[in-house]
Image 1 (cartoon, rainbow, N blue to C red):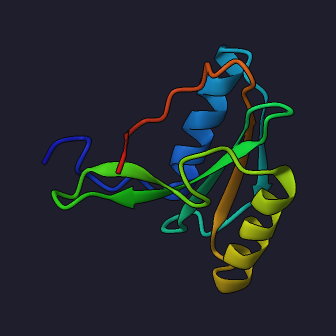
Image 2 (image 1 turned 45 degrees about the horizontal axis):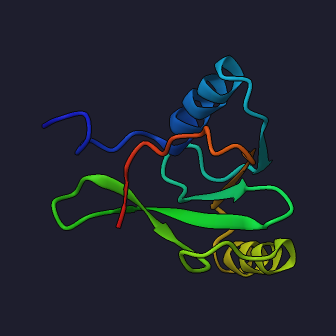
Length: 114
């Protein structure tokens, strides 16, 4: 089993991303702590006044980790992003919500967008 197909615990993934962002001077905030073992991860990428992207961690058909847009591939408004996050938290309280301020587009996802 490769590292890409193995399931990393959500809490560990969040801690790793916090460290990566810290080392690269990219502001990151854990907005909601979910289940440390198996909580789903929702990522809000703030791109500046243009808006934000919402991504959800998923698996592709081969079991490899990837990301799927939550509000569409285009940037959405901050208020639409917050409404989406609220709906998801209402549905799944074990969800992790991570916000990254990245107007320069320096943050790199750890999987493909599917």
